Image (cartoon, rainbow, N blue to C red; front, side, top):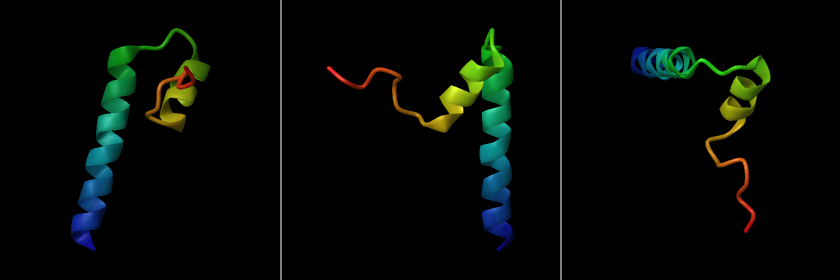
Amino acid sequence: MIVIFLIVLVVAGLLVWRSWRHRPPAPGADLAERDGDQPPRAEP
């Protein structure tokens, strides 16, 4: 249980660190990025 908690903390920390480093111009962009790791235009 403790290991799972630590993994969740690390993942959350990485997400926050990434969002702080990228500094998106609009808050909506960060939310859209966090929705999924897939590119915005996956269709050919």
